[in-house]
Amino acid sequence: MVDWKSCRDASPKGFRSDFFRFRYDVQAVFYSMVVGINPQHFYFVAIEKEEPFNVGVYNLSPETIQGAYDEVHDALRRIALYELGSLAPKIQSYGEVVCL
Image (tube, rainbow, N blue to C red; front, side):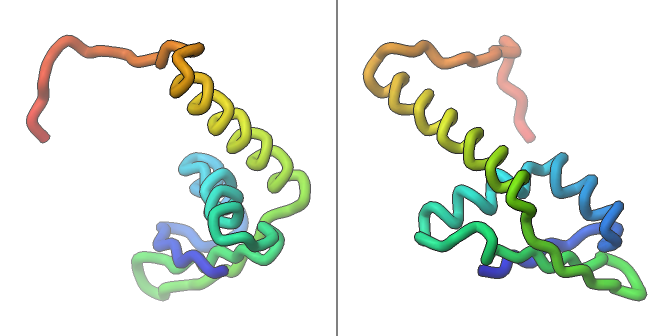
């Protein structure tokens, strides 16, 4: 599976920053679970938004896959507990409606 990502910096250092900030690791593992593929076969193609439009191709290390897999399963467990009425959601209210 390939996921195309636009970014400012497609270098390994630059994309790594976006990768963990936007939780692409969790996204890749979740998508892999949904479609039934091994997350090791999930690739990101990072394309810079401005010239010279450099490109980088990345996949996930076994350690990154395991960490994301643990987070996905914990989130799914919490959702199940909420649906059973055993867990109250953690919601932060800002007390006003803002039109965006």
